[in-house]
Structures are given as C-alpha cells and as structure tokens.
Image (tube, rainbow, N blue to C red; front, top):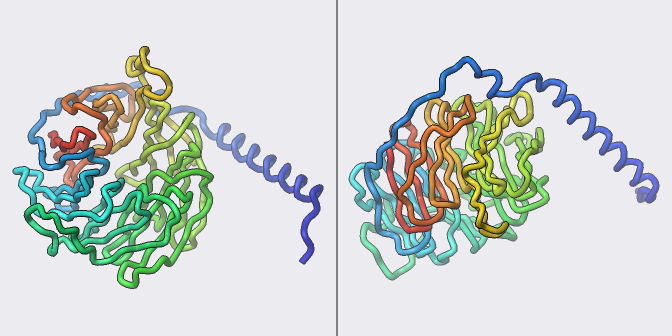
Length: 358
C-alpha cells in the first residue's frame, strides 16, 4: 500500500476543513432562534428550596455523589479513601468500602442498586457488591467484586449501561465499554483530543454523550461505536454534563463560568446560562469561579449548577436566568444530582459533607 505524499495529505486536510466549515455554516443557518427568545412569553418559574439534611462522615474532600434509582440511597466517594452508601432520609450509613487508593474521582450506582462503581487516579474501575459492603468503618481495604483495568490515564467518570455493562471515561482521551462479568473491555471510543471528563447515557437511543477539556461535546453510537456528532461552544474545559429528561438535549458545566444547553436534534448550542455577578473581580485566572457539575430537575425546567465558590445556582432552563441560590457548603461544590423521583437534590462538596435539599 503506497503512502500518501505530503501534497496529497495537505489536500485531504483542506478538504476536511472545508467540509467542517460547510457543516458549521449549515447548522448556523438552521438556528433561526434561541431558547431565550422562543420562551419570551413564558413566565419565569419561582422556586424555594430548603436544606433537609447534612450527611457527615467523610474526613476528606468529596469528589463524587450518585443517587440510587430507589431515590432513597446516595453514594459518595471521598479522598479520605472511602465509598459510603447513605440513607438520604435519615443520614444513616448503610455501607462503607475502604478503597485501595484515596484518589477517587467518580462513583455510580447500577440500575438495580445491587452494585456500585468507583475509579480515579489508580486508572481502575472497581465494582462493588452492595450487600457485601461493611456497615462500620474498618482499617482493612474492602475487596471489590471486579476490577476493570485497561485505561492508561485516570478515570473521570463511570456509568452503568446495565448491571452487566459499564462505560468509563479517562484522562487518556478514551471511553471504554466493559463486560463486567468477564472483566474485559469490549469496546473503545476514540475522538477526543484531551481528557474526557464526563459521560451520560441516552438509553432510548442506544447512545451516550461525552465532554472533554478539548471544549467539545460528542454524541456516540453505543452499538456501532462511532462518533455521530461533535458540538462546541465552551471557551475552556468542559467539566461535567447531564442529559435532559427526554434525552433530546444535554447541559454542560464549564471552566468558562457558563452552563450551556445543546439540542441533540439540531446538533448545536441553544442556550447559555451566565451571569456577570458570578465573576469574582479579585480572582486571577487560576482561582476564578467556574462550574463543576450540573443536573436537571425531573421536569427539566430547572438546571442546578455546582460552582467553585461553594454555591449552587438554580437556573430557569427556558428563561436562562437565575431563580435561586443555595448556600451552605464551605468549600467547592464538586458534584450534585437529583433523585429519580424528582423530590430531592443532593450536593457534595470539598468540605467533606453532602447536603440534601427539597
């Protein structure tokens, strides 16, 4: 097989750039309005949230939390080296796993609530049987049911497809699909040019979405294992994403202090959630405020954002305006999520606590 010449390679690159430009132009022509303009006649929603419970038990920064589908249990992962399953109703610890590595960054419940997963700077996704977790604290590391080892970089996110399959994203720029029972990687998704930071399932479409420090959001076909579309808009790292309840849109959180909404039917950004009042005028670039995590309410009308300045901002998704601010954490809000029944919001912070609001 002959190797293409430098001239042929440059010609192919120019053609690719022209195709990319034509796609961008076609998307721009289709975008005849934005969400804020389309909802001009709709009244801004009014909300009131109250802190119901503070969950205390970690001694290090909490980097991740996840609800169980039963809307009663919450999982937290902390750099004190522990995974804790909580009863969100009374704050009781239901299970504790002592990790081999303290540097945990992500956690997830399986759909049935039978298993939980975690991962971080050890590059490994560990799967835990909930029934075998200890109730009390112990100095002995817990034994995971499976360890999925195959990434060349840290694990940033993990999401169960079902109880036997899980997706993981990594700082090695890849996303992997795993058969849990066999402990084997059965698929790999390549396309991001930087650390992949978060993934979200589109269950009804046999697809998923991802975001990255390369400032893009990508949609992937889970069965055919290819990238269906790439969307951009953020002016910096994209830290986290959440899927709209009807799976036709995705919201993202960025280092540029914005949350953004991308329509998966139009393959483009349709709303930006930003307020100049959130900018810290005394901070330099390294310490400036940003958005770490996002989650939708059950209806999708509200978008919750966890910020570096310890606050949770609540946005009217349609009107693109802030409608509430939840204060109480003493350090960065690293992760948040809404229960499956839509009745509670849980926030996790570097201050080593979780807070449950409704």
